[in-house]
Length: 213
Image 1 (tube, helix red, strand yellow):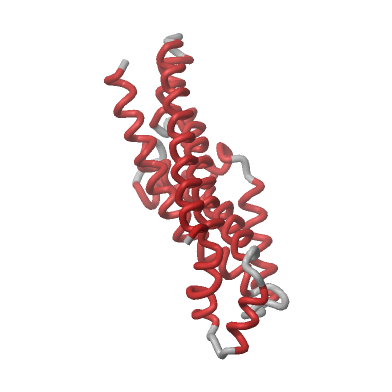
Image 2 (cartoon, rainbow, N blue to C red):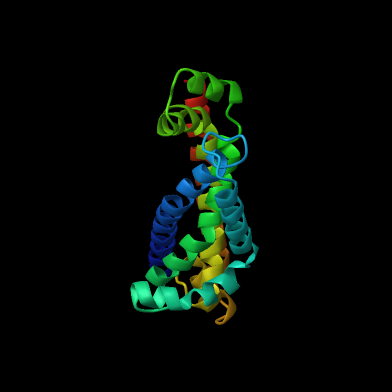
């Protein structure tokens, strides 16, 4: 059983790592734009804010399995195939990006507006406020948000196993469900639980550590 679990674990870690990376690359800037472009923001662009909100809400409305099927053409274009561990990174990233945008938006909105107003009165530019005020002040909350994103992606990757995505979810379905090997399914679920617990613990520790500083 070990020879089945270890490769599947690495596939899950591989998928989640790169999906987290790409979803942050897409979602982090979107979250920042949502905050600074809103009414009374530091870069007011109401129309842009409304359009972005609409797109993000639409993408977040799709169940992951349906979204994964819908982006098969994009996976084929980027990776050359629609099934497999690498191909699954594409829909995982697209599914997580709007979630990341909302997490970033929520975290940045927690920053005290007085600090932002003080920075503006001192002549700070928009980029300076973003990188020297908003992000540093919101860092503990941002870390918790990214932790939540990783945990969600682990769940998504398990669901992706239902349609050939690879990883622990695929292993649990192929052997635990179709071949009635209950021990493989239980082991897969336990590893996923341990992964989630470990990531949540690390995220909490990092957030607490930064808060104290």
